[in-house]
Amino acid sequence: MFLVFSQNQVNSPPEFSDYLHLENNTNVRSLPDTITDKTILPGHIFGFPIDNGLKNSINLIALSNEQHKTSIRFTAIHSGALNKIIVSLRTNMENEIKIGIQEDNEGSPSGKWLGDDPGYIISKINSETKLHGVQLSDGVTLQSGKTYHIVIEPNKIISDSIWMGTYHENWLVSPLNYENPDDTWNDPMMNTLFYDGKSWEIQEKWPMFVVEYTNGFSDGQPYSLMAQWVIRDTRMAGQAVRPYSDYKIGEIAFVIDKKGTPKDDFYFTIYDIENNILEKGVFAKRDEVTNTKQWNTKILNSPVMLHKNQFYQVVLSSPGSDLDNYYEVFGHEYMLDPSIGYGSTRHHLTASYDGGKNWIKWYDADAAFKFITVK
Image (cartoon, rainbow, N blue to C red; front, side, top):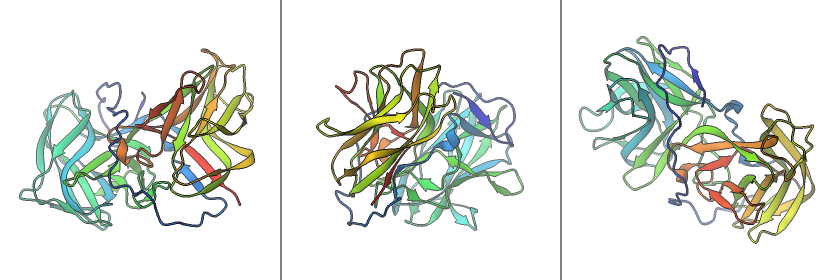
């Protein structure tokens, strides 16, 4: 994994291989069985059209002295008492941080910690730290629709910086929309801020975090990296969905690239729950796919109706491609808690290594994809 640094970073970050993510977690909380019927207009995008700027790496923001602070700004989806917060932190040496929740004051942290005095928690991190979970003090209660900040500041820096990980370009959304999981939940306040000792500055980075409520619900942005899945011979991958509304789709789109010179074209297949084929064809000719990842859109020969609460898979394949010349489809993997990713675990990345005979439900990932509706 490659790392990209913000302007306020100094020194070198610690080496690490990956962010922890949990596979096959089916702990879905507070999702509706149905939603209010709505009219789906032509041109509506059903999907997760977030491409992270088409970058695989993360961004690290450095706290390199006692005056530095960073903030994860977000709008609470739920109301209730908080139990725990989880963020992405690392350091080369053992350090101490102050971490807690503050209300928003015109876009910046208010400076007053929520919860029983002193409000913040002093917590140690070291070279083994990647995801850092902190149990909060009593009295930290959030109100749905109100903006808050997770504030992190050094309590003691021994000899090195503390780095907080973010997920590149900011998307101003929470992946899971509890009211309609087919769409992301709009959060125009979501962002990352940095305090240089004089003023707070917006970083325009998508934060990585989870806040856990005492009732078991969670909010946050749990993805940690954009990943790729190899498409060749019998290896297939795409997106599985169980929509909350009826969608008549006329176009599909995925983020793809190629490695080497594949000997076959890139194909798509739409399956129902019985593995029946609803539509198939060429997703892209081999000379249309570039070695640089980008969105590719396919207009279907015949529109396909996706009925609410029914299970479908839209999968990419290239049976004539091989180990050295193949395609890739891109998506997002989690740092924690698949139940608050896009569509919770109703929508998830799907893969097969035997040409579609058996399917792997990749609950801790989603493809970057668009299903576009028609009349």
